[in-house]
Length: 430
Image (cartoon, rainbow, N blue to C red; front, side, top):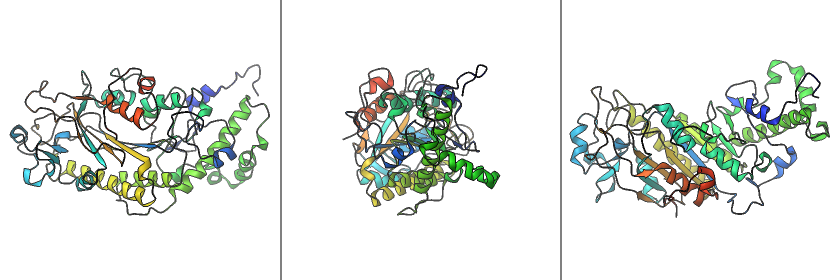
């Protein structure tokens, strides 16, 4: 295929530029070179022969974009300093959903769905999470969380997990071992070799040639119907492109069929509710997916944040209702024990409210881990509201120690290989 004036189109170049299904919302940057029949018939999540890889374990990441106000999420109602500096937005003590009377902390009253999971032993609250020399830029801090590097430069931490777990070869992972539900693929999921599938709507994750003209259908199905049309020269550009299209078509059908199932419980009609409903359906269908990534935005509450009511309260309620329904649905189809969920935000907010009835960019904030496998309860001490760093909370737990605990204890990976450094893994799992 490659002529004297046409350089060989390498897999690296192809994967770098990605593959688009007639919609920016349905990018398929990476598909392995193996038979479509194998993709349909296999039940292995990654390499079935790779020792130490718990093939049935799934990680779901929920990103709360904008910088969630941790102090009005996990409320230090027992500390008078909280009420002194937040006179307009503090949560009244008698409305807090109590977690620990001894420590004087509880949850925002709109987090009833989260409190229910906590009471059932399915939730871990990790307090005071951050990193050294915190950055208060949304973009930079999110890059830091996504890469696991305080420089914010490099591949994503989950992308590196796939790069390592796949044995250094793209063929070692299913093409949809990582799925991000959203308009763009997050940096966290992007490795040097492995790239996730990303789509916002399952209907867009399909071949759309028929929509352009019906005459395109027969040639497309002829080329992607089976492997007989893939050239014998497996390293050729033609073979790679045809096999990629074949794999993409099979994965598209699998995902759309999975998402088309009706859930076993009702989900809230919020953006996050819709995303988690899709994830639950894909888990129920048994897709070869190890990591799912979803996100909701709106947490940059500089003005009119409110206390028990208002914008922030509504956002917390959306998260609580969605994750509660998610675990009820997982339990209904008997997959709850396979799924660990991690909820995080790029930073918290400053301790004192500002002059606009909101809060500005801060530092340390809580993380939440959900599932039957978590060390339920509270991990870490709530940061001091008086011993501050220029008006901000001092972090007590480095977020990478939480990553390390998840990688070692749930994903079957050596966290040092993924994170590039050894950490004292946080004890967040049983």
